[in-house]
Length: 305
Image (cartoon, rainbow, N blue to C red; front, side):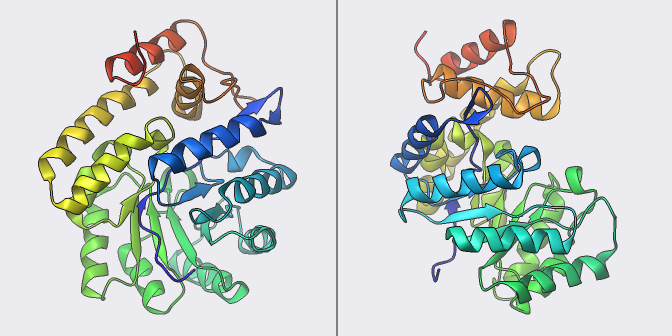
């Protein structure tokens, strides 16, 4: 892969039915987003149920995604696991399947310092010729990747980019500044769906919005306006998407069940997924929560009333 990844890169939400991968829905889902113009797809991230998936399920998801995409856009594969050797095993699998880049977090569970995290990414780099992206998600791995560490690894040729889901807009701004001063060795993608406009103003190269599974066209309109310097359209589209993100404000459900549960429910209501089934032990949304998601889809113009 010679062209750096940028633009709109949704983190793929996974359709299942009776516990099995729902391949027809996956095909419909990927084609819908590709037809909307997305620039790449991130598979097996937080939205992609990576931590819920066995090695066999990871392989099944990657193989089907690569087959369906058929080279139309780059495929980025999450190789997320607790420690270095386990991540390298996932990299080997991703290489065999034929992805275009891999995405790894800092090590977790056995918590370590910055020196060990630095060595972790260097060892991953030594193990593969694929571009490596750092996934900054401290809420899950309990370590914040510092701008200095990320830019240092980029200048050494270890990292190709950063998928920033830290929710730390100050740190992201400092990272964008440091990256620019270093000659832009990193591609920077924000995973912060409701403030993508702010990330673009900071100099982001694109976004990885979970909500982009539900409304890829909205994020494409915002990206195209950003490229054209039309900041008024960027702001208006982001305001509408911020309203759409209210689908996650369901009652009695938290975290993954609320966020990805709402995305899957929206995709079912839109006729993309056959079910809104969730991985065990998470239950799917039902009753009033489904009605809430439907209400927001109607309010934001994605579903007719």
